[in-house]
Length: 400
Image (cartoon, rainbow, N blue to C red; front, side, top):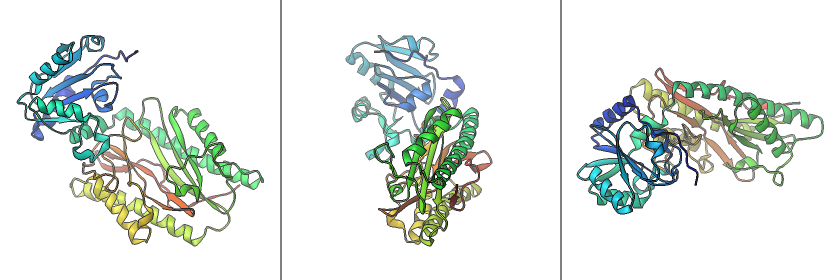
C-alpha cells in the first residue's frame, strides 16, 4: 500500500515545551502511537501521514525522544533527530517497548478512562494493555493534546479569520437567493440552495470540506438534517430557514457558523421566543468563558455547556436542547481539543490560550421548528474573542 513519505520531525523547541509540561504534571513521558492513521494527534505532533506499520515515539520527561519503528518503513524516519530503534517481529517490538517504558511510572497516551471523552480515546485498548503489561501506568494525555495539538498557529488564526468572513458572506448570499426565488414564484429547494452555497465557498477559496445545511424550520428540528435531491423541501414563505455553513482553506483552520432567517412578512411570537432562548444561551456561554478569563480562573468545557443549558432550561426548552454546546476546532473542524460538553461526554479539560471552538446551543421541537446560533471563539493572549463577524442578534428577515 502507498504511505505518506513526509519525514517525521520533532523540533528541539517543541520537545523542550513538551518536557516542561510533563514535569509540571508529574508525568514520566508521553508515548505516541499510531497504526494506519488511527491517531491524528500523533500524526500532527510528528508531522506524519498514515503509515502501514505500528510505531511508538517515547518522549521522556528528560533526554532525547525515541522512535520505535518497523524495519520495512524507515524512509520517513531518516531525518529523525532523536534516537531510533527498529523492530521486525512482534516479539522484538514488545521487547523494545518494554525497554522504553519499564519502570517509567505515569505515561501519557491518547486514552480516556471509560471512554469519557471519545475524541481523546485514539489508542486501542489492546495497546493500552500492552503498555501496562510493560510496567507503566497509562494516564490520559488530555492536557498535552490541548496544549500541543489543539492550539492554533498564527497562520492558522489568519486562515480562520479569512474563512469566517467568507462563510458569513456566503450565508447571506444564500438567504438573498432564497428570497429572490420565492418572490419570483419559483422557490428554491433546500438542496439547490445548499449546492449554490457550496459552490460559492469553493469559488471563494474554501476548498477543504466546504459544506453546510439549509433547512426549513420543521426539518431543522433534526440537528443533522441533510437535504438531498430526493429529500429537499421548497423554501417558501412563512417559514424559518436555518443555514449552517463551514469550510476552510487547504490545511487551514475552518470556520463554522449557523444563522437563522425567516421567509415571510411577520415573524411569529413563538419563533421569536425560541430564537431569544438560543441567542441568550450562546451569550451566556461566551460570558462564562470571558468571566473565567478575567478572574484568571481555569474554565472547563463542561461548565460552559452547563451555563448555556441552564439558560435554555429556564426558558422552558430544556428537553429540546439535545446536543453539546460546542466542539473543538483545530486541524479538523470537529477537533480533538476541549469541547463545550457536559451532556454527551463529561469534558473537564480547560479552555486555554491559543485554542478555538464553536458555541452553538440549539432548540429542536420535533415537527415544529429547529433553531441554532453558532459562533466561533478563539482564546487570544488578550482573552476570548468571538471570531464570527457581527454575531447574529435578531432573526434575519429574508426578502426578495
